[in-house]
Amino acid sequence: MKRNDISIADPVKRNASVQERNAMVRKACTQVGSFIIFFKDNEIILLKFEDGLNEVQRGASTRRLEDIGMQAGEKLEEVFPAHDGIKDARHRSDYYTQRAAYHKSQGQACGTQHFNLLTMKGHSQNQVSKDQGLYCQTISGDSRGGKTTNVELKAARAKAASTYTKDTFRIDAAMGFILKVLFPEIFTKMKEHRDEFMQAGMLTKESEYECCTTKGRVCNDPVSSHKDLGDARRILAPGTCHGKFVGGDFCLPDLDIRFKELPGDVVYMHAALITHTVTHFVGQRTSTILTAKTDASCVKKYRNDMSEEEKAAFDKERADKLTTQDAERAAKRLKELQLIKEYIGTTVDISSGDIVVDNPSFPRTEEDYKFAYVHNYWRRLQDAQRAKNKRVRSLKKAGQGEQAAKEAQWPVSLFYVFNKQEQSRLAEDKGLNPFEVRASQRPSSGKKRKRQPLETNDAESFEEVESPEGVETDIQENEELSS
Image (cartoon, rainbow, N blue to C red; front, side):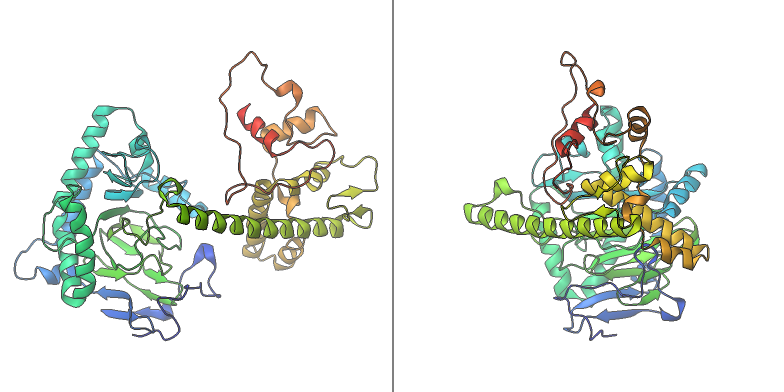
């Protein structure tokens, strides 16, 4: 199957008809059997080999490889269970939270683990790592597993992970063998990359057909639609699943394709380029995924390791990014001020770039305080936007389309939910900014307090804007967090 509308060099855009939080493809688009999908420039997108694992060893062994994977996983779980990914960006829906709670109540794991090599994403104490350096030898990318100070527990987990990788190497070898037979050039490049780390003593060799540097184990974890942006761009990530379950169809929203992935099936895909997800399933479903997160196409080079020319280019790119970001945020803030003006009425003036209301008692109500201050804090404006989106979706789901359309035109600030500290300030001292730390709430100079780093104007910071009189800046907001 060839997709003449998509090239591997093009940024793959999401299908406009697909919603981000529920990117499931309709059943009418289900593909059956084994198949291959190509980009228009003949680069492979995805290969599905039905019952591929067992075809590899047919006649050589009566033991099914998916059974080996299940038994090895159960053995690993006794010492090192997969952790829930509640904080994972792909797990923001209530569905995942409820699913994780269900599996926990049944004594079953629900989460992910990574083995072998990952790019270093922090200090050694943040992962169960053996060495500091550009690449992190880790038994798991799970930060909870790494932050434990229990040395004996770390050693037990490391031993269990080592046993797991050895017990399941036949699965890795089978998927590598299929890749070598069907796409020898791709296999050779992937294997050469792995051999570099093996020769450096960072990986062991169990089979000639191992070709990846990282192994992932996804246990009962139905992540939402995503791309694995940390994967190498030019590899085909092999994956297979095992367990007893019903459902769990594989969906590719970008391509409007859906197919069943049953135990023993093997799927190879450009996971960094194509959006993918799995539908709801009943039972226990575990996936074994091989990939590489260690080549030049996915490793982020730190500024301190750059040459002077690279630093100059990096600084310019970052400055341009911040300029664009500031302009976008300023436009969103201006749009919010206009919505507030339309909502309140003609008594509001925003010509100064802020809210000026012709009413001496403003702000007085909780709604007034939201209109007066939320737009000055980028992160709070983002929180309000998420709350608004959730409210509109719930109304549509309840069949109240008219009310949903009406509230969609309301200011974003109106949907902000004050936290306990902010509610306390409103109740205790009307007339002041609820996001401002009161002098009475500041710690005395004689007390030691943990210093929080100030936020910078980068991709994760909020927008610096001119504050109205009496309103403290983003630095004071950090002091509030410190207190």
